[in-house]
Image (tube, rainbow, N blue to C red; front, side):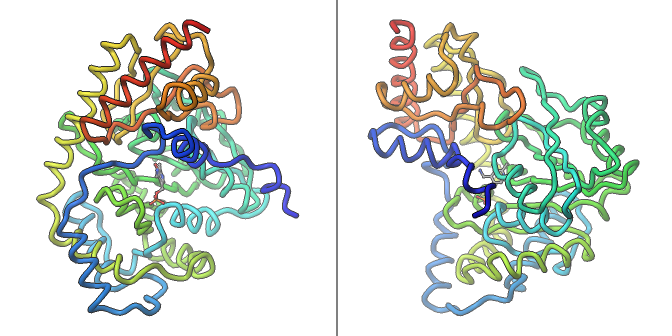
Length: 386
Ligand code: PMP
């Protein structure tokens, strides 16, 4: 048996969603919207299901989707790519797996900034490499040059950069990205750029992919996800976007992970990317309204909310909210006794994880937000009464 899996805990997202279902709780834990997908894209998927092919897609993806992804990034983010740099995967999770398996060898090290999405560490280990955590510090969660530099050794091969950042809701600024780019070039590292939240921005911000920094195009493997762009997380259509030599390498790993993904969903995502630019701005404003509603209600209920300007996630500081329980204890109490699931943040780091923070998903209809915050207020009262 492989000890990596024998000792592995269930992903915190799955754990909290199962608990939410078991207790009939409002689910503000796992990051998925309960509104917001464009009906046009569902119609396109239905048409593709009945009229299109239901047999294996090419391993690297339908040509129409590969072209649509490249054109989308050229249009929105100035990336100089064509279809030869795109490989369609089963969600960004598989894109990350392919990218990490393709670039890391046994004995290598990879840098992960924590709190970090929970897939990185096990995938790095599956590639035989070692995880080097660099802890970002609340409440600003800034990338500091000295901290990254201190983690680089002669064995370092890759940096995983998640921007915008789950779970903190931060969009890293140009200086922080320049630091990562600089160090990657100086130490000849690959950057696995998990940019799945690239369109989920608020407050007028714009997104700059790390691959557009000078010298970075040839050493960046970008991972994207239609699940995030179109609020269709269950579709699990993602992709790798990279310079052809890196894309080819990752595509070889992808061949023997899933080989290919559902052709009908790929066709619908191609349609969405080609036709759906006008959907993006209203989507952002709708999510910003949901964030503002949830933040205001939480603040009103006595919770300390950290700023969130990207993703559809926000962080609550339990200690600053007057809650003495740690994140896991509060999350258990909230789902079991108050009827709301949240995500404790300690599973997002292995070394010295913060234990006073929980993550909430705000991409919810008003009634879901209202019910969730009311339940959180009950949980806070229960926590205070012991
Ligand atoms: N990376 C990050 C940072 C994420 O937040 C997510 C989804 N929550 C993923 C990757 C996985 O994306 P997908 O669902 O397309 O596999």
